[in-house]
Image (cartoon, rainbow, N blue to C red; front, side, top):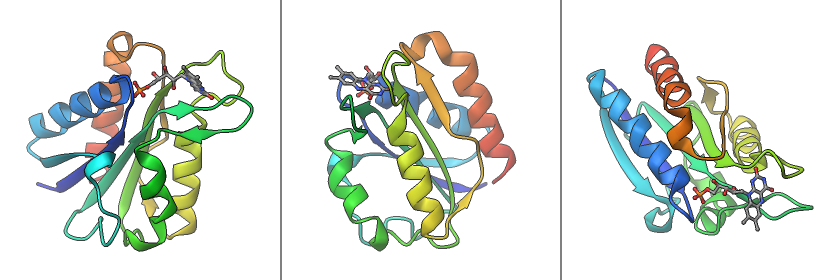
Length: 148
Ligand SMILES: Cc1cc2nc3c(=O)[nH]c(=O)nc-3n(C[C@H](O)[C@H](O)[C@H](O)COP(=O)(O)O)c2cc1C
């Protein structure tokens, strides 16, 4: 059994509900999961004590990639989360009609790579309503579980 933290930033609830679905899948596989809203997350040693940390964030902005509001202060302090050597995965909701579809997911995973984390899953990008992507979400959570 692994100890997994899921940190998510969500404005209209889509990435939040995706995080909840991922948590349910992992718990069904016998793993311990903590769900944490980025609005309540402190950066210092965030990853400590967890076997894996999953980061969820929706994308805003238009010409430029903007992370979801609550995630921005955490992202700016990523050098303090203790990512080095931690297993990580990234997911988020967006809209493919925008230039940078789920750009926040790529920005977060790129930063985690720079900080020396161990990426264990392809970035999960949900286009539109996550309720229509439940199979993709479950499959992604299973791929994470297989790498724990
Ligand atoms: C003003 C605005 C800007 C957006 N910009 C982007 C974008 O650049 N890329 C993208 O993939 N989605 C973009 N979206 C879509 C949101 O990311 C999408 O609605 C997402 O599901 C919101 O997730 P949340 O409820 O977890 O915050 C934008 C939406 C709005 C209203």
